[in-house]
Image (cartoon, rainbow, N blue to C red; front, top):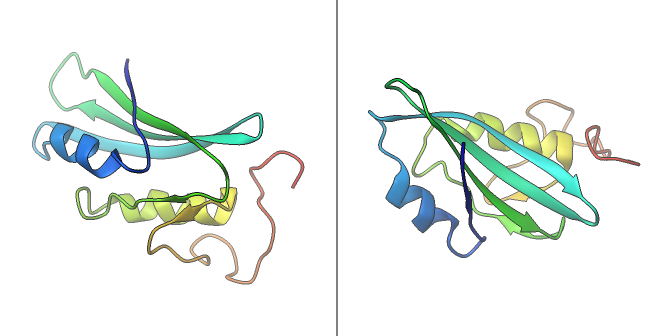
Length: 113
C-alpha cells in the first residue's frame, strides 16, 4: 500500500493530481483517533491488477474542518456523511443526519464519547 501524507490545505490538490476515474476506485474514507488528534484517511485502489492501494492521510485536531473531495470523487459524499455522523468530525458542506438523527450529539465511533 502506498501511503501519502497530505494536509487540509493541500488535500484537494493532492487527490486531484492523483485521481483518474477510469484508473482508480475510491473505496472508503476513515478516521482513527491517534491520541488527541484524528488521522483522516482516503482509500483508493487501482482497477487493473495487481489492484494496488493508495491511501491519503492527514492528522488533524478534531475541531479542524476537512475539505470535501466530492468535487473530485462524486461518490465520496456517502463516506463523508458517515464520518460526520459517526466520528463527529467537520467536513466542508456536510451536515449531520445521514446515518444518525440530525440532533444526535454523540460520536459512536470515538473513544470515550
